[in-house]
Image (tube, rainbow, N blue to C red; front, side, top):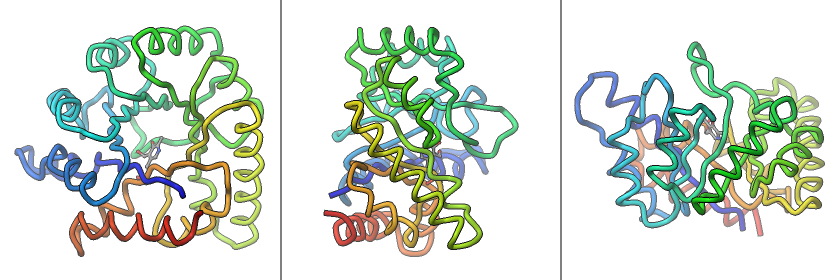
Length: 241
Ligand code: PXP
């Protein structure tokens, strides 16, 4: 069965909209865990637009499943990661102007640098995931750099306008997942997944986990976070085996 990691950045985004103390992403993480999430993801951005250093500190203290710190591999954030010791870091590209992460990381063009980053994380028992496009060159680079996991970027699949385009993107994801697994990598997927399109993702046997934020937090506004997480866990149970 595919497991669910819940990205709680949007809870912090809502808090930052008023600059106060609620809603608290730390409380959201506990609710998501109680509802069946096997991991909590948060992205500490350079501009701290949602998750901040206090959140990360408290999340590290309180999360009982797995803390996945999504991050750009800059020296500032690497230092924080080595200090905080999340269970896992997911390395992503980051641009200040973007609304959310756009596209996968170009590991292949920066292989020497990312190999060093992986080594520093591993020295501290932190597992490393690379968020990559479903492309062999990037998957090869992630494996060469020593990654434990590749998270396949599902954004293009999720944004496909026609069913033909969606099937084509699904085919790329399927091939990439099989290829990554053949190299000994663990395979996860995320970005743009929701209560409808996750069904197709569940047909890819190598995918062990999905990382979902927006769709779950959006649904939570209407039905509550506990129900929103349970609904997704139930779908994953039904659609994957
Ligand atoms: N995985 C990665 C690497 C991401 O950057 C994001 C967005 O923060 C997600 C998963 C979750 O995407 P969404 O919010 O669209 O579910």
